[in-house]
Each structure stands twice: as C-alpha cells, then as structure tokens.
Length: 146
Image (tube, rainbow, N blue to C red; front, top):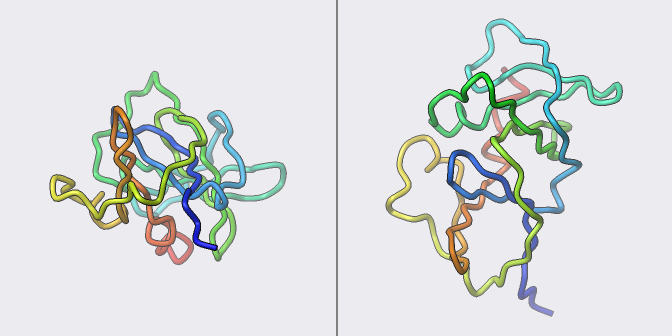
C-alpha cells in the first residue's frame, strides 16, 4: 500500500515554517539550561540534561545561517532521535503536528539560499505557507564527532 500522507512535527525560525518527520521526534520541551562546551562549532549551543540523558543542543538559527536569537526570547527544544542518540534542535517556536498529502511534495525551492539549502530536502505547499522539510540526518551528521 502506498503511503499518501506524511506526518511532521513543525516549528518556526523567524517566519519560516519547518518540519521534521514526526516519527523521529522523541519529545518537545520548553527551554532547558545548557552547559556550554568549549571548542565546538557555533551551531552547538551546549549540552542539556534530559532526565539523566545528556543531549547535544543544536542552535538551528546558527545551523541554517539565520541571525542570532534575541536574548529575551528563549528557544524551544525539539528532541529528535538520531543514529548516535538524541539531539535537541533549538527553535524559535513550536508549531503543530500535521499530516500532509505526499502529492503536494516539491523539490527544494530555488529561492532557498545559504546553509539552509544543505539541510532542507524539499517542501510541501500548504494552503497559506510553505513547509520546509529538514533532513535530520544531514543536520546532525557532524555533531557527535565535534
């Protein structure tokens, strides 16, 4: 049987709407205090202790080439499962879990520039916005080796 819908956990960076496969999401949580780690890439915000599990926190603004988050806005955590363990994606705000029709899938938009182009695998055109689908394998690829 051919799958006709896909489910995504969605979030925002500025006004851009992103999604990750809902099956990869472990949980979504509010901001957690982090321990910074010296000599890591700028996109590694630090480590968080998630009920005894040490999780690398990736600042998605830095990872995708956005400007820095203002200090009064604390990020939210989208904790995903990767081959090397859990990783937290720090995002501006959380959206909903949505189902999209696979027929609405489009290849990477030509207008998408910068580092984000390396991590977005495609898009879904929804009624009032474009859902950019993150390739989480690429996003976390060099995190655990840092």
